[in-house]
Amino acid sequence: MSPNLPTLRIDRIILSTALMLVAACGDDSEPATTDAAESGMMDSGSTGDNADDSTTSDGMSADTTGSMAEPQEYYDGELSAALGVESNEARCSTCHSMDGTLAGFSGKSMQDIAYKESYKGGGADLLGGVNACVTGWMGGTALTADDPEYLALVEFFESISDEASTTPNPIMPEVLADEAEYEATYAGGDAAAGAAKYDASCAICHDAGLTVGMVPAFPKAALSGYTIGRIAQKVRTSGPPPSGGTDASDSTPGPMPFFEPEELSMEDLADIIAHLREGA
Image (cartoon, rainbow, N blue to C red; front, side):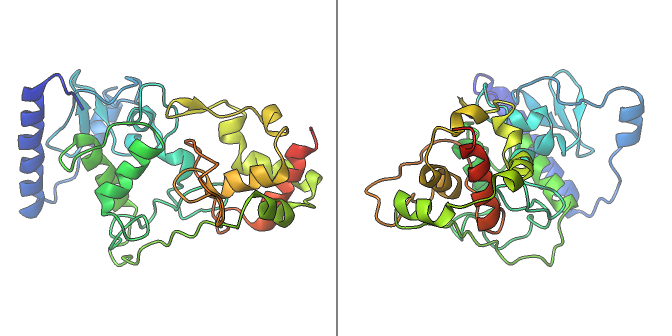
């Protein structure tokens, strides 16, 4: 993504088109990743930004310095974080597993994601689903269908997806009437049990002060100052979903992704809240 280099954009579009033509012609040659890795050319994502990228003829992503990066770097490496705004530290892997795991993650797994019929509750295609995260959570600039960053992500998603898995993932946030109902629903958790559950689902951001988009995650000590209902409402409806059925407005804005009951059970959330409140 290089807005000050229009000629590079043209080159990238031409190159992306060439890649699609090669794929359409049935080129089944394998990417030459081994030699690149052994020769020290494999980039671990240390550049820290997503500008001036292009795609090589063997399907690898390359920046203008000539260094190489595997498509997975756009899922869990520095190149993933660089899809967001400059300060962003979150990556796709912060919220999404790649092996079907849901526990401990706030989003659906990237396994079998590539061939779904629709995304985000039916309102988006794959590009739209990716951009909802890139722009909404990570504060970055929307990708286009010919961006090398997007093409690399698609390549990675396809490598861990079953073409027969086309049924869309549902979006089912738990939206209760208001903060008071969340308070009643999530009171009485087990603080002792909540310690390990906090470590599994929350520590990755809150203990590290991870910056998501432009906002650092609140430290654990600060969370204890909130009521049971406020914490539960934030966890269940942060960001796009409405925060309550009878609330006048969304009281939980911010870049924190929400956890559906499928990803964090009611018992586990109650225990986490009790653990947090123990320090109040």
